[in-house]
Amino acid sequence: MKLQKETARKLIRDAIISVFIYAFPVVLMFLVFYISGHKPWLKNETRTVQKQIKNQQP
Amino acid sequence: MVKFIESLFHNLSLWGLPVIMIITGIIEFGLGLYENKWNKNERILDIVCFVVPKVLIRPAIVYFTLLALPVILPGFKGVFSWVPFWWAFFIIAIADDLTQYWYHRLHHQVPWLWRFHRTHHSAPYMGMAMASRQNLLYTIFFSQIYLTAALTYLGLGYAALFVTGLKSLITTAAHSSIKWDKPFYSKRWLHPIAWVLERLISTPATHHAHHADSSNDGVGYYKGNFGNMFFIWDIIFGTGIITRKYPAAYGTKAYKNEEWYAQFLWPVFKSRKEGSELSVTGPIVADELPENTDHQFKREPGYESLPNALTRLS
Image (cartoon, rainbow over all chains, first blue to last red; front, side, top):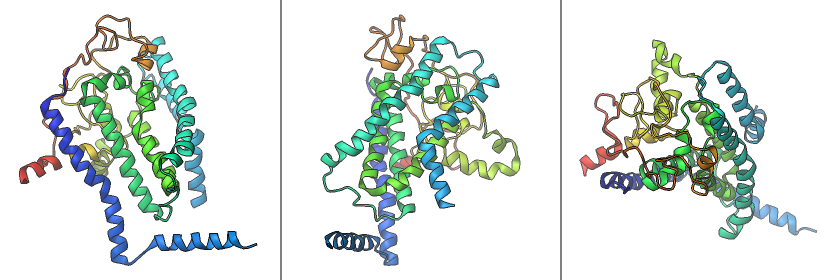
């Protein structure tokens, strides 16, 4: 039994739309960060550097 | 309060959900909701499917997360741990559930995949007994588990705990033979909530329709309603039907009460039942496949699925 042509067409069409849905929350998050000027990844970097310094101290 | 909710979801992921399922299952059984259809073959299959994945799958995921991912993605551990909680929750909820929607839909619409998912649909009843009923290979290749494990490795693990907990509760409740959503349809003042609820998440009405043995009575719709936690994917892709009714019969017309081991371990073990989809000489799909998953959707006036709207505009 083969996959029907119409079903295959819909699967491909919906898969392409899904790529945008997957990307949507990530894009929206960065858009909100861009608008608000919020940069949470810098806070994380600072924390990592502080941790490294602490580890290096005797 | 946060600590309490955190421990609640932590316990839910460890032992809470199986306990909830067992208690709910006993209540369902006590209320006679299995209608004497839970025979010996069904009982063994349901119990094996409930126990074995919990013993086998969890160690496999731990192995994948702790050993395989550092090799596949070296140096990426925790790189996205800076993502704020609610954003991480939003990202995982969509990534996990949309992946499961696809995994599920493909097993219905691609003929050679159907027999890996058939075991879940062969149950002639709804309820906790059949909620975990799956072929072993279907469970092992449950794609979204590995995606969520990867996102956990990348630093979104805390949010994953809540998403997976919430998802388990919603999907389990949608399989229950206790029709908890009925008051939302019968009481007029609850209709606005029902409207949102049935479009956002899977409910017994929409998910029972997916488990109906017929797609021709205007209530059952095993050719669609693929959503697991979110029903919104079926709305977007036009693969859903909302009727606020429950099917008269569950299962699949081609069911031949195949041996529990054949249903659990096909294609390793085949069924001896003549003409069975799980037998050596049986058909791949006994029932006809969906030709057009859009045409039976009971739409609101003016409704148009997103893909159809895009096609029309292009």
